[in-house]
Image 1 (cartoon, rainbow, N blue to C red):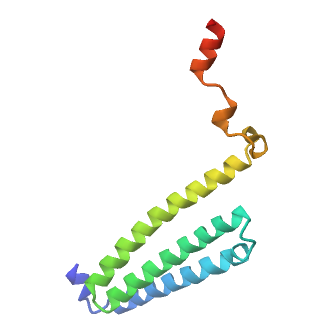
Image 2 (spheres, helix red, strand yellow; image 1 turned 180 degrees about the vertical axis):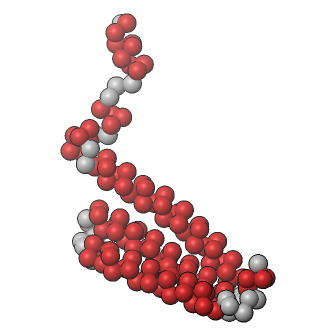
Image 3 (spheres, rainbow, N blue to C red; image 1 turned 60 degrees about the vertical axis):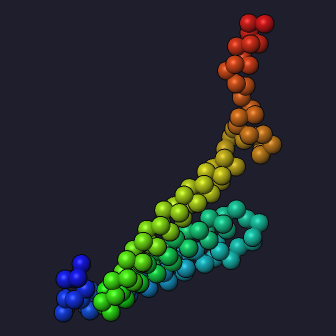
Length: 133
């Protein structure tokens, strides 16, 4: 790793990586801007905020990686990689949960949101007891 950090040619790819990260962060904000500005009560607003946050954090992680590489700061490279990877995992889980909730809300099994799927279908034990009784 010290070879890459001390290479004489590191400034050019590091600058490109940092610029790519900044462009990714700006693109994520611009892409979700209209949905983020929607009403707070709209469930799609939460998903748009999480998608925008995912792009911004990925861009900032790349920006930090490029800056750490250009300045030959190994701690910044490591911190950028660790925080970027952890946030991608965390935001992917949150986005999956939001998508599942949205899917359940629009499901035909939901009966207009009054019942959950588990409450609508009897369990196997109660069905067997009913038949045998």
